[in-house]
Image (cartoon, rainbow, N blue to C red; front, side, top):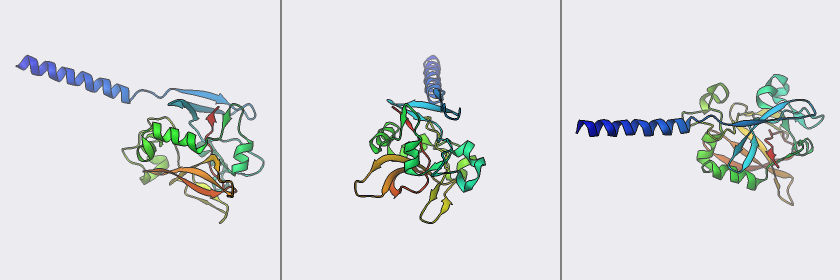
Length: 205
């Protein structure tokens, strides 16, 4: 009986170790260098897609802001771009994701609620009290709350609270463009004016 219990416990420990090792498996990333300014970006394969793990940080001549006009924010959060600028500065081999491509990503990592936890960088340094022990970034997407620039009020808003990225889907009769935004619990799509400034995560062609 003691031998049986010992073997059962040992098997249980082995299974737990395998599961733990699987959960803690390092995220494998690759790098891409933008030939225009020499900046290098990490990207990661999530399902059948390859996404940049960092917000884009190419300094465009127009339609481009550092949050609060502070260039010190760029290294961590990248630049905020108008929709047209985000389209025009797209590097070769990459494109602005469509809503369908974003939904593929979200579905792959567990749906709108679970996906947020699996896509956020798990650090109170960035998210403050808006993070939790559920946040794992197991997808490798590494979302950071870079905020946005709202053109209708000419204000920078929500750094430390929300992450926003342009998508390449818009209504035929609309001046607005859908964006994907994530907070501590959900990912959802909303319409915003194309002259606002949001981050961009390009997806590989």
